[in-house]
Image (cartoon, rainbow, N blue to C red; front, side):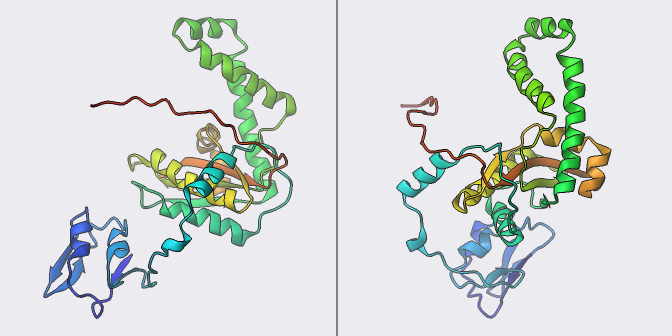
Length: 276
């Protein structure tokens, strides 16, 4: 929670003006927080010129502009980062895992109650893989084996996506597993009734992938997997999920078994300009 050191507070009002929840007021020249409305976004901590506000009484530190990455460094980071689906069997030190996961808290969010479940036990990862493969097999038998399903997919305009997924599923079934030995899986979990949580989870995972890349750890956003894991009673038990919990995103982490060498140049976002 946000804490105010009243001896440091000068009553400048910076925190009052920045608070989009309207929960900070000045009384007798000192800031006061109505915690019933505080979302703990910590904008007030970041803007205070006197460092009078803190998180759980941990003093903030001033920005060091000399440590900011250059545009060229960011260009290298973003273009080197690629989704990695094959990992070495080497484990990641838990201190480094904790550092990587904690950078997710600095991402933009609408859900301030997220928690991360980190699975780095090989046996549990294999158990989750088996649970996922049962779902994959069921989907294949229902959606791809009967010819009538393919015909219906074409009629309703789903043929392209339908056909793109078929070889991926067949490949997983042929090799018998979904994961390629990730050292850890990070699940972003929160209350299922909080809106926009799926978007917020992806922002948090994006922070983690960038920090992991800088530490030499490969990553892969696990798109459809959490949908199946979240619906499995056995998987939810292994992850210790509560009734109101929902998995909003997941990330595979590990040391890469493949080495990408080249930046793919020439790609560009399609941009539509509106206005003069």
